[in-house]
Length: 405
Image (cartoon, rainbow, N blue to C red; front, side, top):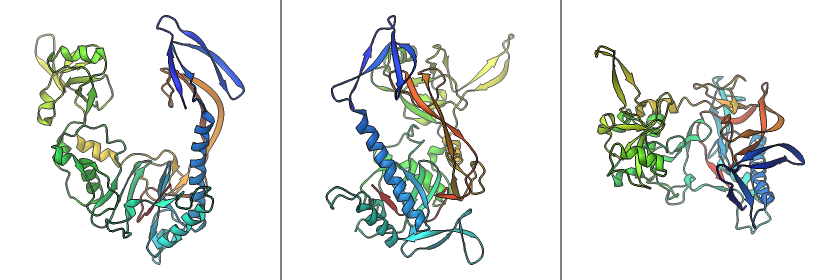
């Protein structure tokens, strides 16, 4: 889908007319516009997305029809709760009961999951060798034998799969922005006994090991400040960096920037991969050019030290702690209430009610995702009520072989 950005100039904004279907919305003025190109055909984009959603809907229906559940589903995959022979797994909010009376969910057998993928394959218009749904490679050891996976999930995209011996698929969602210096041979890690040949950030794997209870303490990186690598891609960043170190400030290189604990403006310092030095570096604000450090001592009018302003970011230890407190806003707790950071069990659907379309200024309210034309056409979603039945999604669960499209 080809869209070409067209700029009118800062002092020459143009009127842009907006439609939502056949309804014309109030026009706006903008200094840039995305003009359809030769290969502009948005319908195929919507059909591909809609087809993917339909496929996931069919998969979910098939799993629930067999009385099963799933740990997570995302774009083109689903982690179905299953074991080799099936059975019950303790889970708060589950529709089944263990012999001791505890609530439970039903784990499908691997054969039942395979049967579901075969049924959906009958809908395929493609060559039979092309599977619409297949078992992901993480389900198999390096010899191609299927092994049991266990899952831990906190919210959308924050999940991890492991075997009885090692982490297999650690999510890096919400963690990839953090800068954790390491030697080249210690930066990345790959599971030892997995058919999928994929590497992950080593420190992320270590975090999930701690969450699973596979290690008692976090490594040294837990004492590092939460820092990110920041690209020197604008004259503003380059100019401010040169106020600190002219030789270190180079276009299209990297500097470092602390991730503030309580918001605030962006501060940068010349690139440094030694965390022990971060606290004593000079930083400069991109908003006002003021030089600062991660913490500073203020003095009163008489020159006496009065109090300390601590502008330091959190340590990664705190980031790791808060990672598991992420709230799943799109679902309801097993009892039908809103999810919290401590919610566990079989989550329910959180119903929505669609209201009207409206457009938002690109830099106005900051809601939603905005295209580069500066205009957002969006259907609002009003949360309403609760739903009496479970959706089959687990906040925390047992074993979960994955089926991917």
